Length: 565
Image 1 (cartoon, rainbow, N blue to C red):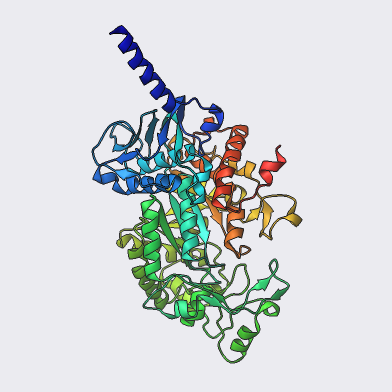
Image 2: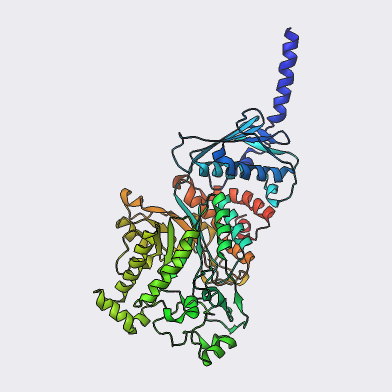
């Protein structure tokens, strides 16, 4: 009998040893970005193969399907879904009310099972992203390269530092198709960020279908040419350029993002940056009969012909700030914007609508009889207070629709709207001021989070950019909590955001290059505890992440990986 027991134990030991393979390189096995709050490695690994199954409740069906597709495509087999089953070879997804943070999670990988727990479905999804980074980078190629996957044993307990972890994509200066917007969403999700700020309207284009105002896309979504080179340009390319998203496409993108727990915040610019809308409906201007102000020697031939023939308003073909803004003195302006919002708001479940508010010159308002009458009627002191009136009036309307507004920090000028959230871009001053007034703040200062700046000082060997210099190390060094705030005021800093303005990004590959790996660094800034961040440690993990980017075919800036060797 003793001999039989000994043999059985021996066989079991051999079987377990097969599944408990020691990690050849423990350091390399746990290269997670953003860095988790707590990670305890262990010996052994879980094997994903034909016997693997996923078990979850109905509440986690979307997450289970996402995980099944991810693993199944990696090993070239269908990972079965067996609701309620708990046993060997299973990956169990569950909700756990004992986890404190709404986006927090626990991931336990053992040789014979994986347990993923989250306070909410968000937490479970983020645990899956961590699990994804424990898998070989080759899984990102989209084709089956493995018949069996080994996931190193580990216990991860994690939660984000900030509730708002965002990226902005400007599709107005240059248009990007639905497929790329979805790819951008995928990349945001991989890095556990949760917000896409979608910049949809500008001087150079109006990109969202508004059925009541069809000329917004018939006219406003296309420009007759674009300057060549850096502003103010060396010539005009004379090519009609444009595109827009139908409301059905917007719904599709929003639904796609929702499955990855990403909120999309639409931005409809007002009162400035409205030249495309004004080209479509000139009455929105203070002076409908005046030509659009452009750099005429850079204007396309077609636009010049239009202006000569009596069509004074055109979609802008150059970059910069324009004097022709929405008229703050006409009731028709507010009626138009309210109608637009009536169609935009139902498309986006987000509690926020971004109304811009930045870079709105007052020159036209100063000489506009309608604006001056409004100032007098409302007992305003100047044009800055007229902008505050404009913003507060729109905020009241948006609040009435059950939403809140976000605006760039210029909305502080003349008095801040009662429930507004401030996005601080001109440094941190606006954010500090807003937080001290107990308004919510999203930090996005140019010095740390404008990804249209150059990534290298060797500008001759970099793609054309707007200017400035923002290396990845500086992005990584950012702490969104300013020293000027006390503990109570710190609570109003919701998080931070990276901005991708696309004046000089004509292609998808250019957007990728300018965004990565700076977004990678920002993802750790907004997720991981300040005290746990270490630049050298991050660089090591970034090198591992770069292999994942390579498998994806991502066009990221590689010089940071070369310069530090």
